[in-house]
Image 1 (tube, rainbow, N blue to C red):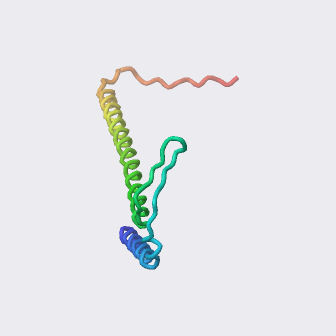
Image 2 (image 1 turned 90 degrees about the horizontal axis):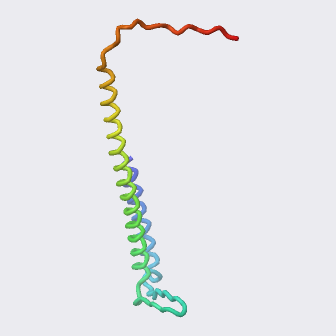
Image 3 (image 1 turned 90 degrees about the vertical axis):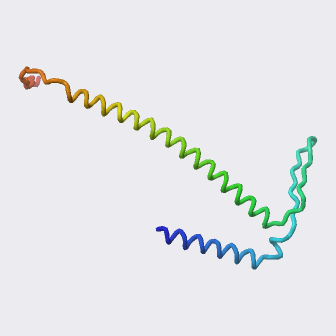
Length: 116
């Protein structure tokens, strides 16, 4: 499975490099990003090449995904710790009940009641 992942990653990298090489004129064009809120402010960026915008978007998306998965991992690690504590407490209780002395009373079978 690891080889398949590496192969897919290499194919993705090759396809993206082919895209950038074949569209060199388009991806090197400069764009100005604008954020305009009516009656409040108007923000403009410096001219940025398109490939830089795509790369920055990809990196920000990756960081957001990493942050989400890390928070999920920490939440699950806390839940695992809580469940392990609960399991050890239940095992301790089970061992205490196993060590109780048996009563010397004979076991009585329940009498079946006649059906009405």
